[in-house]
Length: 316
Image (cartoon, rainbow, N blue to C red; front, side):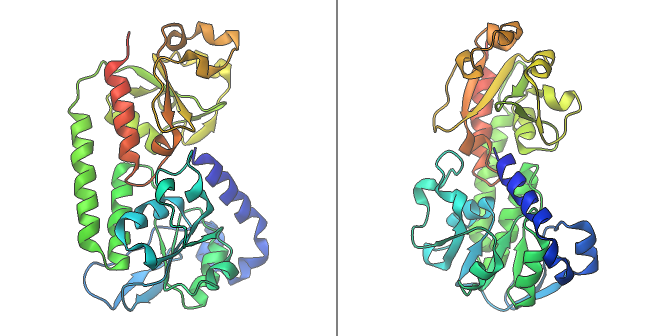
């Protein structure tokens, strides 16, 4: 689950108070970053950094660094491998990254530390909404253009990030092709018949409520996210007792595999309390690859398709 990345990133922000003086006042007050604005069209062009400051993109970058897994996943489909000189350490995690088998062995692994990033001599750096604004300020201050992709809670957000990335690296046509292909697959999912089951994502004490891409996967598939219906927002902790009270018809369990496990109530563990859940009693528990359902790039469409297949075939 991308919750792990969020927790690590937020912890890093809280630990970085010594860098706050380097921030613009607004960014320092918010301690968060926004999505960048990158115009389409030829270079040079002026973009807006995630800190809200203008920056010049003089030419398509030849040395690209990503410090967001979602950008790793986008860039790997957008540009030639030799143009990517830095990616996140998460890209190698088969359970988390859908592109781990294409993980760019020649690229350095970075964690967001400005010194290590600057050592790679990047022409451009791509960051997430949870990258430390202090670190971004140091990069911008060093004259490195930084593109932030903002929060990615819907497929519209994700496809907008693909377009922004394509405009930033000089690959707008390739970005358009990726977006068009994703839209075709999303439309195919929304046209499927389904029985509108009540669905719960259960990740060992955590769930995904409203305002998450997992929630949109469920909704676009024709299901009802019981966590969102109960007012849960974002990735949130959830007790077994609370999960049972939500009374789902279908339970989705993120797994570190690349295949869907069907009718697998054993994934919930051996606690007798689960016997009271309709989904568990009827075998409507499904293991879904975390790398699919947890992705927040265009590769998340594979997660959507997996969820749609489950929602379409569940047994009342």
